[in-house]
Image 1 (cartoon, one colour):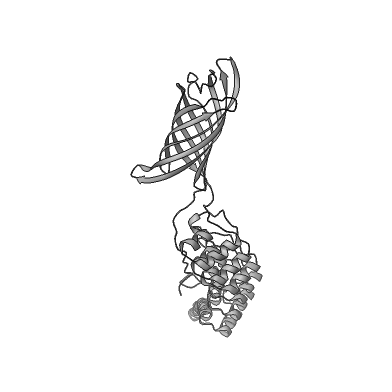
Image 2: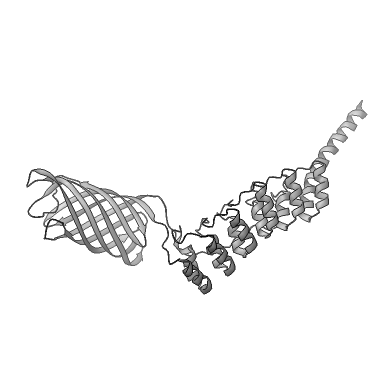
Length: 386
């Protein structure tokens, strides 16, 4: 009886060890490119999705080294083509080898052509980085997104420009990428070519219709307080607005109301208003900015238009008034706070007279919907090391 049990345990232990060795043998055979051994091991029941100590399955090695027959055998046994292994997709490994036949095989088997790694790189970007035109053309044909961006704001086009792949740039331009609206202005295709002095690529971009871009708008919701002195009357307000930074201008849509109804608004034609509500737009441009320990200091010019609704003390009724004007002043700002001291010339459509206004405002930018980035950084992606 003891002999029977011992024999059974030996068979069981040997069987388990053999099963484990078959899976590891499969990974090693794929790494070595031994197609026949891979097929034999798969026929014996080896797991096509097993991974080695590096976290890679056999399919990653087959794609990375261009072993088409091995890739076909693994996929036939239901190797996972859309999964990510240690930040590497089989599709990216195939692109790294510039093997369009394996790429096509993966796409037909369900691989996603626009997959992204943790840094936001797509297969098209990797192909563009290396100048693999055959892979670029095939991926574009299969629906690769030419406008996809990395976390730094690089696109396949800007990456191709950075690496001087002129032919690749032409292929990507034929895919009709957007001409502007990039999240990082420093990494837009045009600015990349300009920064790196890529004259051939810059000429192609100009012919396509691209020009210097300023990135997508930066939207900030702001709350602020301020005071305005105009024609010897004071206005105290609190306001909340939406600030959009685009083309190096600040556009503020704001709503405001008097802090105290005793404060009176601009006197126009001997009429004063209080209990005012204001809805308006302010467009300003900062220049001469100097960084300091307390923030950026400089000058600004601005223009504004707003509609004010409130009670007219003189006429004892409510009335709406339109104001517009332009001016400038001193600016102090940081990432969260902004202070302005300005002088404006205020006009109304119904009056020939202008009002001089000195204003002070302080804003807190308490929520950012989208933050543009600045500063050029090279895109240099190493897929994985074996």
